[in-house]
Image 1 (spheres, one colour):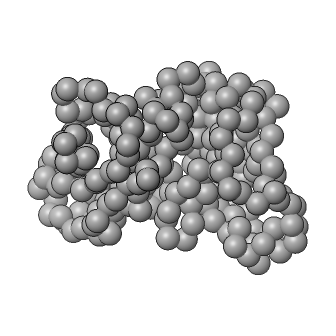
Image 2 (tube, each protein chain N blue to C red):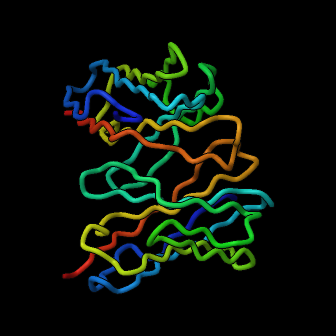
Length: 115
Length: 115
């Protein structure tokens, strides 16, 4: 079964601290893509970062990095130096090779940054 | 210069009515999608079109019918609206041809409320 699991429904973090959002996935495909999206309270879905299953380096985009551990099937998002504007829902997602362009989303983690 | 746009942003209607949501992308992408996000924030794909052809059709009631007049547009028509159709509907697009490696870019969402 193809599945994404996000075990943290909500998190509170102090501003300027780093935060790790957990994501594990399940797929029998050898080739797949992993994504993180941010959904602020305004509702739009914003693409943050992508990791391919054959990428040897962990993906990084500014303050976002993806801690990819293939053997553990985990793809945690790390946000460094958190800001108030980082408060949002964060969704981990996967696109297995066998599903062509279909993306499967996790249930999301609501991140709240405290000033 | 919105990349993926949807209209309307909000839609309030009575049960039994028929309504349409429009989506347009100016990214030159070949593939477009419709997702439904329920009240618990769970996102699920409904349909996907590549170059005006249907490629993904998840288990969605027949009352939902996507229409793609050209590859830049993917509209969603809903017949005989039911209370359970209340949700946020997101349109998305991706370049096409790269399968599981493709990043999908989302529109702002249409908040549908059926009374």
